[in-house]
Image (cartoon, one colour):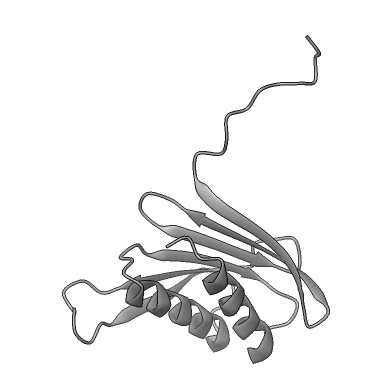
Length: 127
């Protein structure tokens, strides 16, 4: 028996990990589906950055209302909130009722970068 080898069961949370260049920046994206929420981490700086919470308001089946709030980080970045809103709206229209926790640690906050992140997450969705 070797000292460094240990058997670890597979990570119990469904997840996907992506690494892709966006506008010349290496971007790591981790998508996790927990029992009660989705967690999406997108980073170009190796840290979590701004953390947002997005959810669909209950009781609005026809014209749903979505709530997005900054939990930690930059509160004056409306494009980050728009990114979270796009993701929760897509998740909801696909039938998911789970809220979203989104972490964005980005060098580049441009519309092009945020659209690429939204597209990558939707293309690799777990809902």
